[in-house]
Image 1 (cartoon, protein in one colour):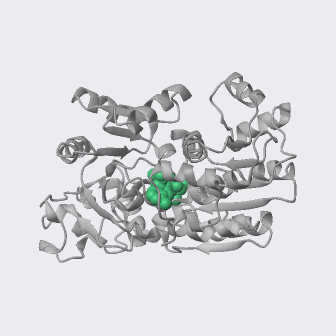
Image 2 (cartoon, rainbow, N blue to C red):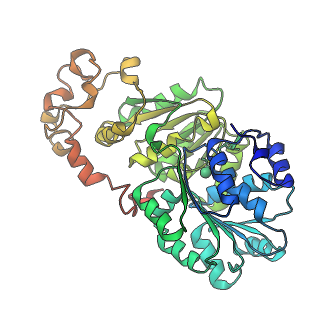
Image 3 (cartoon, rainbow, N blue to C red):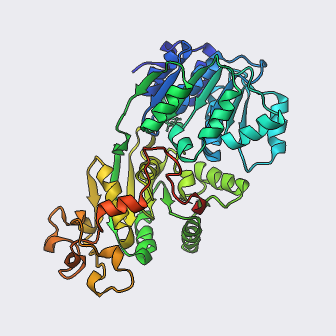
Length: 447
Ligand code: ADP
Ligand code: MG
């Protein structure tokens, strides 16, 4: 491992790092910092929690001069992430005199304009609001020398490609640019080719679908039993936990139930006002709240070191979301657990995700001796499609559980597996997360 002081960083930058208690550079930092300092573009990929923020921020802080206009631009997909990046950089750049403004939708223009008027050297922005500023002339990119696209995969997923193009067209050709992503689908590599000049690639962990270091488990239960089990899992916890739900309505409900049970929970979902989202996040981050209930808006990039458990209250609607969600735990080398609640109707979706999990996955139905009793498809008239089909054999029968599966004899097994033909599932439900990247979240409005 390399010490930060051997990476060629200036004294005042190093002091900011030491203040943070960092000594040794993480792998991605050790790889990327010298290359960015040399002025070459970078494509970087490493696990969530591997320290990508400092990897791009330190060289930026090193090369930027105070009071010489906006020289650094960092784009991030969500407000939460933009704020988190700003906070980190402010800490690291404490001794540099470099000023940072965060620019994102949902906050009044006034605050941002004030900050910009006072003068800043680095802008951390979500693309939409940045474009608003560019159009009204409150931000100009003519002096920018350093550009970063953080969480590039999410930006693609959220349909920001055109916005990014628009922004880059307004910035100088001669710039150092880097692109970071926890995953590296071909669409991202292509993006890198389009925007970066001969980038040096660091694909440190090409298989980010590992969820390594996270104790992952799942439990197949009826939807209406989920809350009861949630309480069982969070009761013994000492640290913090995050509960991910599929929709904002579910998020609100789960948070409400937790309050009724006297848990200190906060929620984040897309309909909440920006200030309430910030309040929730702040409470969770500073430890005043023990549980964060959230939709996928909070799944990417958010770093709260003490998260001990991630509960997927609902199966995410695509596999990347699963890995981003569970990546909220086991940050920076700590240990963490992730439990996924699988309602009977989500078994097909879960099977698709499960295939991508490359580490041992614990089956809690087996461990806790909880039976699955999916209604007999032959007797179910209302939606025969869901359980019927007699297609693929269910994955759940593997591992030799008694009676060839969970159901007691006559359970789901009779129909030849409740998992529905998995190929059908894939075709109809799952979007291609590695393809053109368009809207792979499906109904984003439900966030
Ligand atoms: P990523 O963007 O790769 O998901 P982050 O940049 O959010 O990861 O970093 C994850 C955590 O690791 C943060 O809490 C950060 O403060 C911490 N961290 C980063 N670099 C170091 C380091 N060199 N030593 C110790 N902790 C670090
Ligand atoms: Mg990050």
